[in-house]
Amino acid sequence: MKRIVLLSATMLLAGLLPPAAPAAAQPRKQADATLIASAMSAGPKSIARDATVVAMEADGSMRTLRQGGNGFTCIPDDPASPGRDPMCLDANGMEWLHAWMNKAPPPDKVGIVFMFVTGSDASNTDPFATKPEAGRRWISTGPHMMVVGGPAVNAMAGYPRTPDPDPGKPFMMWIGTPYEHAMIPIC
Image (cartoon, rainbow, N blue to C red; front, side, top):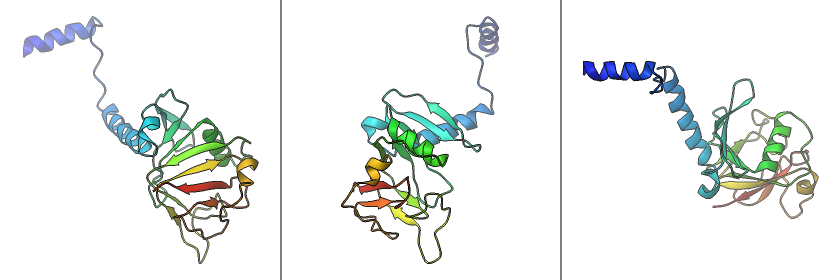
C-alpha cells in the first residue's frame, strides 16, 4: 500500500496523473449531474441527448453545465415554481426566453420549446406574475410544447385566449402581451 501511495505521489508530481478533485468540487459535480438529468427530461431523447444544458445562477446569468451541438438548449426545473418545469428550446426559443427574462421585445422568429414533464404559471395574462391574481389559480399543464415568437405567433388564430384556459387542450398563453405563445399538449 505504501508503495502505491509513493508511486502515485511521484507520478502526480511528475505531471503524469491529474490532481484529485477537491472535496468541495464533488457536491457541485453531483448537483450538476442532477440539474443535467432534470433538464434532459424536458425534451425528446433525440434532442436532449445532444443539447447544451445550462443552469440559471442566482444573479440571473446562465452557467453551461454541458456543451451540446444540435442547436437546442435544455434548462432544469425552476425550484421557485410549484410544478416541475424543465424545458428544451431551439435557438429562436432561447432568444424569446432571453427577451422575456429581460422584459425586452421578443424576436420576430418562430421558436419551439419542449416541456415534456409539466409546467406551471401564475397567470395566463401576466408573464411576470409571481403568484395568481385573487380568485385565480396556478395554471398547471401536463407535457406540452410551445410555439413562441412575437407577432407571427401572436397572430395565430383558432386557439382559445382566456385567463383560465383548459390546459388539456391547445390554448394561447400570456394573451394580449408581446410574449403570447401557443401551448400544445402532447399527451
